[in-house]
Length: 466
Image (tube, one colour):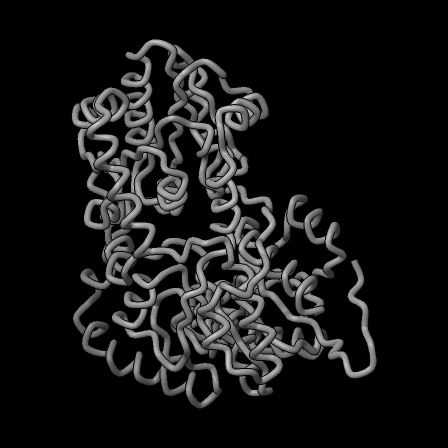
């Protein structure tokens, strides 16, 4: 759909930088739609990976131009990779190249504003910095449920197969490390390649930061995000969930089950998995052992079916064993998550952002951490779920939540409290973010409009799948 222009209309597009996986684009699409429909603003999307068919189709349907670039994996030739200091030189070279690509992208698109998912990623750092230098508004949007930074640091140390090489370095290297790291930082400063980053979503240099809820604003301030205005807008994904929560009924649930070939007369238990192999926080053997234990418990109940929804970073082949279970367990790689969650009777996960979606859709939730993975205890302190650490405890909890109405009602009250703290859940997040961008372009003070929904149009549902 072309944007009509008239004398005095700013023809410059809003440039969205999309990271992989393609699912991150879903955060942008409702905002792109609002910018077009409510603010007469065109958009373009810059990928620094190869977008898949879904992403291309969604943008083509909207007549949104896309651009694609590749960051170099290495700058130096492979034959010198083993030379002392080569890795550092190569990294500086990649920084230099990323800056050149960022500048070229801004020259090519001449945007009115820049929107990113995470302004600490390599290309995004330089796109945001260059846009700031050109006087353009820059906005980072919180993509998903974010842990405290200390938790991400723990994950790095926990990963299976990752050894602490620093502790085995020779004494001279350990003594020289502070000097060499100081020289490295000085070199980056001299070349204009240094960044003072908080290792978190929104920890870079964007001027504005749209976050999901008040609890996240407090978290980001606590862990050091600064030099930007943090605005609680809610999340575009949650707009779709809001619409689904208001409209779901027995007939709609039956329609969704038919769409995904789920039994209409059985209890459906949905398990949203986590990328444990990709993050290297669990072995393949542990993954299979846990799925088998959950499947065994679900199979104890008559007319009860377990369905696995894979995380976008997972490979379906890693779950091939599910077809050999008795009864077999259904595995779904792609789905509209609000629909799938709304159609299930009980939801299981560990620390996925989909746990918050399940709370919004008022599903009973069990969170599991069978292998002492640090971030899988995230919701134990937050509440709204029953958190378990053993297969036996899972079995007890599973049956109790399906049989005990009092336990289910107590959990429902907790869910409502969590949603109120961690999200702005009213169906207007995409409207707020679009207005935040449009007002920043126009130089309008944005605080009041970003925090007010009374005069915003109703948000139509959009597709949200993970």
